[in-house]
Image (cartoon, rainbow, N blue to C red):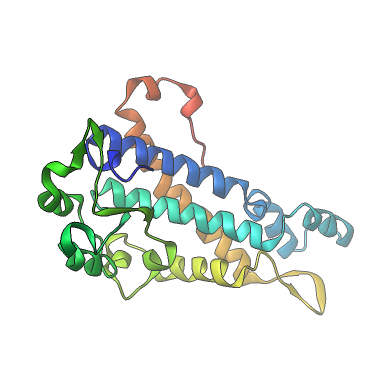
Length: 233
């Protein structure tokens, strides 16, 4: 996502948000603990034989790989929401324009900054040689740890629930796709399953309505079934 074009015009911003949402959906759907979630729930409820259980577990990717997919999905999803709200998701360079952006860079560590604030300071330098260029923004974007930090205004701006944040933190830090109780190889940690159920519900609830709202604004996308996204089940 270019650190210039997506802040210039509503249509550019829409396409950046649209792309982030599609990427988030693809990442989450590709996590094997998500695509196999109903079967994992069945294992928890002891609906499968031990042989069938082992067969299901063999189809799962390593825990760290699924954790990466899920964490990156939510990073893209939350940045898409901020961008859609008119906030900057690229890191502000505190040294830009003779340190005129130092205060905004410090503020960004605690709260989202609106693109209009950057525009007011940087003015006409937003366009150079016919191309969009914003000298005050770095190529790198805000990371998931900051977005999930309950001490910041990001938590409130994104309306994140404590349960969702805790589920994401466990997935991101513990890298635990699935855990067994030692005395019973067919029993799965209930908390892990509940985390994935909550995360799936959050993706469907937060991602799909926003995606469809943006899609409906552009007839060439709205009328093309290629751009359909289904609820993850």
